Length: 265
Image 1 (cartoon, rainbow, N blue to C red):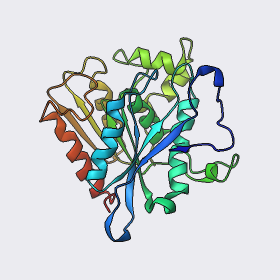
Image 2: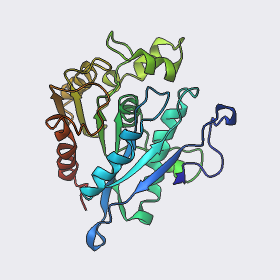
Image 3: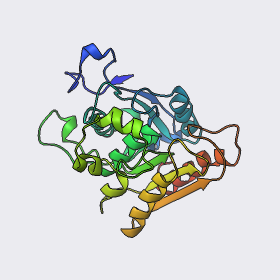
Image 4: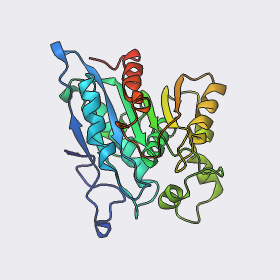
C-alpha cells in the first residue's frame, strides 16, 4: 500500500477519522518483462464510503487478464470537493511517475469507477491537466488517463435523474450552479479526453442509465471514441455481477477493449 503524498496530504483533516489516501497494488506479473497497462479502481459508495466488492475483486479480475491494477482508497464524506478530485489526479500522476518500478507502461493508465466512484473516474477523464508547476516532482507529471471505464456511473449533477446523495456528499447543499455543471460529465466532455467504456443496466433505478447515455452522446457529438453497453437485467451496485451471466459480460468485454488499446502485456 502506498500513500499518495509522503510529505503531507493536502486538505487532510485528522478529525475526520479517515486514513490518508492510498493505492493498493495488484500486479499481473506479465511474462517476458513486457510492460502491461494498469487500471486504477475506484469503488462506489455515494461519496460516503467505499464498497469492498467493487475494489479487490475487480483488481483480481484484471490481473487474471494480464492487466495490472491498483485500488484507490480515496477520501469520502465529510471531505468535500476538491479533495476527491485531487486524489484521483494524484493517483494517476503517482502511477505514471513510478511506472518503471512496477514495469508498467506509463502511457497505458486507465481509471475505473463504480457509481460515485464512477463519477470520480468521470472527473478523472474530464478534469485532468498535463502537469502542474507547483507542488512536488510527482505533481509535474500529467494526470490525463489513457482510458476510462465507467460502471453504472453517476455522471450528471444538473439533470432530474442525478444521484442527489452523491452530489450532496461531494459538493454540499449550497454548491453554485457553475460548479455543478463543471462536475457533470456530459457537460465536461473535451476534445483531448481519452476513450471511455461505459456499462449500465436498464433496471438501475438508483443511478439511472441516462447518466451513461448522456455522456456517451456528448462524446459522440465530438467524434470521440467510446463503447457503451446497456444490459437489460440487474439492480444498481452489481460489481462483477456474478449472479447475472449476461450482465457479467461487462468484465471480459472491458478486458478486450483495454487490450485493443494496448493495455495487455
